[in-house]
Length: 398
Image (cartoon, rainbow, N blue to C red; front, side, top):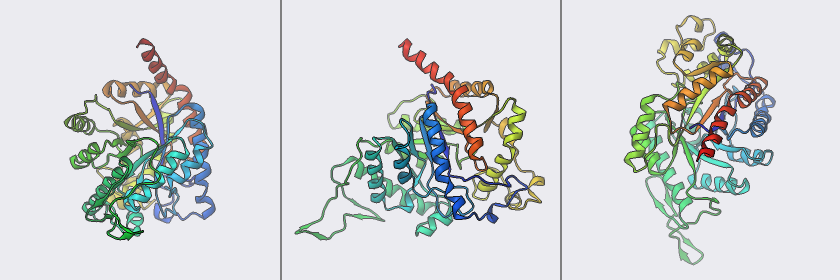
């Protein structure tokens, strides 16, 4: 039963001249003053979400994005600040990009954020697909050497889980020798202790399900990591096969769940008085997202020619690219009045009885702060109550 609603904000500042005929992605270069508005924008979203009863504000770590699409380099630092401006809202790391960190530094920073916010920061890890970001930090991204990236990522997560869950720990692997074999204050160093450790263990941890490989799912389940599908770069919604394989992977490890269990699913939403109006209002935003993510390989089925056309305002419209109408028909976007959106989410709930939380995708690239606040408020006041009321009714029946 769906009882909780979050929203994933990738960290985009307000943009002008968006859509297929708008400014090409690689030609955007925004001034520092504009890029830094992402923090006030994040705070505005968080305050409204807190007032309306949303469960979690999610965002993602990214670097060097002068174009203005993803502009938050340190989630945990921002979240400590925002937690003190809100009352109940939780803040999800969706995601900290592990290969760009030393694993023990990430573990320490999370533990500090966890303690300073009273447990309102949710841990999350990702592998990193932007070569400009990850490779600049001296390690391969998924787009330059996916196997090496995965190998490093898995070792890092192994280390962090050891550090979180044990009073003392050591690790000796391919990339890390922890602690190093050095003398320390009169004795040989054999083990380390994370200081501080998180207030609650095991640490709740989330990871995106993008490739949906069996290896990735097995690794997540081994560490008790839960999965987020869609709502960000992983466009296309949650395929039934992915959700079913996730349930089967959990069952193989001894955790029986209904379909949708231990998942958050992102649903892109645009509210308006009619479906047609919503589609027309969101069209340029949909196109801007495709411009941003298409060349990174996150829009399924595009040919090399179509990807090239996305960078040319004179060619994109005639390149046979997917449309917002296609996305609505495929269930990747839900557009229309609150009653229609509620109906579609109820259908999802029936199909995925184990699903408890969705991320409301109304913070896409190209959405202004004003439009996003309007959408969050409308959804929070006219869609969310139906689901919260059914949860109350269910608990009363128990």
